[in-house]
Length: 219
Length: 217
Image 1 (cartoon, chains in turn green, orange):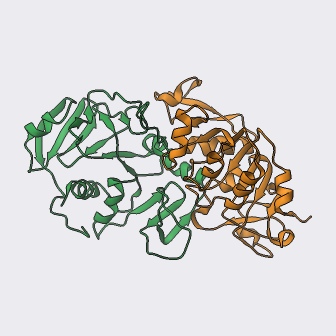
Image 2 (image 1 turned 180 degrees about the vertical axis):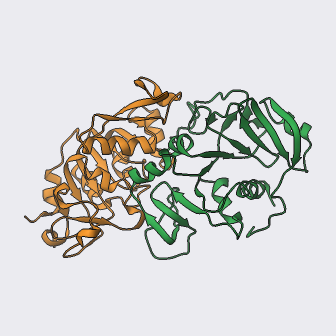
Image 3 (image 1 turned 90 degrees about the horizontal axis):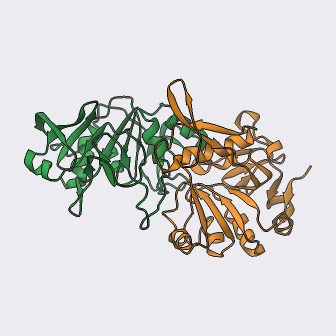
């Protein structure tokens, strides 16, 4: 598996049967490819789908939140944007998976603007990380050698202290009351490798090998 | 009353400086023909409220490209490089609003509310200049209602009365915007005699005009 597949495969292990889940664009979208067959997951798309499915090449007007062609699964529903954010902000989404530019050891997330350079806007991300029951940040551990997991985010925040779990190709980290815990490390790397690639202070106790690496579903 | 209008009548509704809701999500459910007519009319200094900046030459991107837009209020502008460029040249003002906050501000106006309290944006740039109100030990931002002079609605099937239902994901912001403007014009993707009352999403009193069809043939 490549880095992106490793991340998506590991995130998929966090899903529980029956969860209503919103996946962001990029690596998070790939999580849908790794859902275990014994679990039924319902995907929500903030543009207005409960029961998002993959593009089947059908002639219709169904798109996902990235504007790309998609489908709806049996039992699904199309909803307006206000209802969609009633799900999102109202705490009815079990889990959201998003990428980030930076995340810090307190769980704050920066993902929507690099002042003076890139201003894509926040879309639905601010509402998602504020309202979802569990927030997973799925991203490469570093970006072109630049550290992304920090003591304190430098870029403008998407949300303050909302991330619960960080999954990268190197490691799995959990944000808890006492700090950022290193839970699992990809056996390709050492704990020291992870520490060097991380600016945040990691609480290192009882670190396990990263799970999900053997998952070859659809990949 | 027949609500059908033609292009000429639609253009007569347009004025410089108008605030216009435009439905659609990354142009899915976008009233493209109405947008084309706004472009043809040449009105300017518009404030456009839309989920996103569309694409170059598509959706609200067409009006932006023709320099008709003074201000864009949207949640996402990353798909249209024109928006970023014009914003940097200071010829376009952009107000970025979290998507859930944007739709709720629009809904609030249509429902006669002054605004809403939302936790989204607390302790971020979005909080700047806004009132923070504490309710039961939790902080919320006061976000003000957002109405428009005109709403351009797409993605809908209309009936002879102006009732609307929506197709697939083209629903998005459309039914909310249809409640939140002085004048509401729909560009239907299809027209039927009658929509079953059980299936009506936007009841006809919200709809002022239907573009095309009967009067436009």
